[in-house]
Image (cartoon, rainbow, N blue to C red; front, side, top):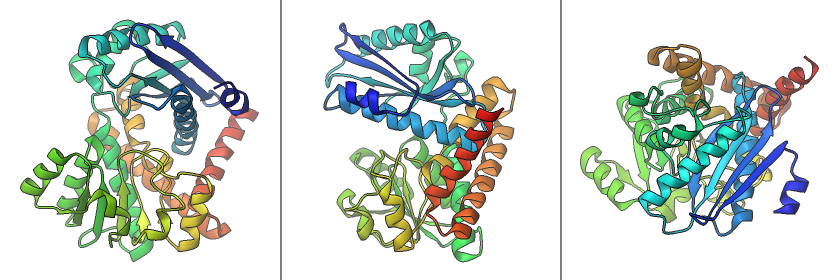
Length: 352
């Protein structure tokens, strides 16, 4: 862990071992140049503390770029709760309250919301000790609730822009879209795609989810091990990251990748691999900032839900069009183009 922290280009790492739960609380602050750091709290089992810290650092960097390219007044941060395999409900809730006290002790340096493994209901528990630095609580607790639908709105908007660039029309009717992961984002996205007339394929590791969507929506199913070989117009990774790699990219049979998962590229070189194959990649940190944007807008700027949804769609469409135009003009990968745009805003903030 020492070498990870020493070699990282971020600002701060807060690490605390929680003996009662046998869990690590890790908060990575990548940048506060555009404002206080914000990012979700992820809870999952990791092989070791170093793997958890590495995940937190990479996700925090992604949040920096997400807020920068989206024009949002926040810096990049991320929290990871690395928990043991068996953690009972009472022990889990107690861990969340202790974590909330840590967030409160930081005095606003880091603000958080849900991520993989946590929910709006969990934010209610964290806020018992961590308020006012906890966002996306349930509506009953005064929060904006689940950010998944707003994220899905942004992904759908990005798909329309991508379709426009590839096929000359934003209409997704008749386009084949493979959605990998039918969670809070993927499930909502599937409904929007079906309403738009798209031909939806689904891949998920949760057999109960697969059975339900097969029976209710009669979707075409793709086995998890065959997902990268499936023929489709758009591939939407909406589960965990690092799915686009040296091993999987040569197998892809899609025209573009547009999904909500964070850190879809296993390594930075994978952006060039996609570019060389002629597969259009909508960078994840451009596509998936809708949830964060909607939550901040509703809870700090007085937006209505309808206004938040409209702003998310418009902002992501505008940002992605700029990314595609710059990538074309400079003959660079879309990831590099998006990073140029984000870096320019971060540099302006340094000067100001």
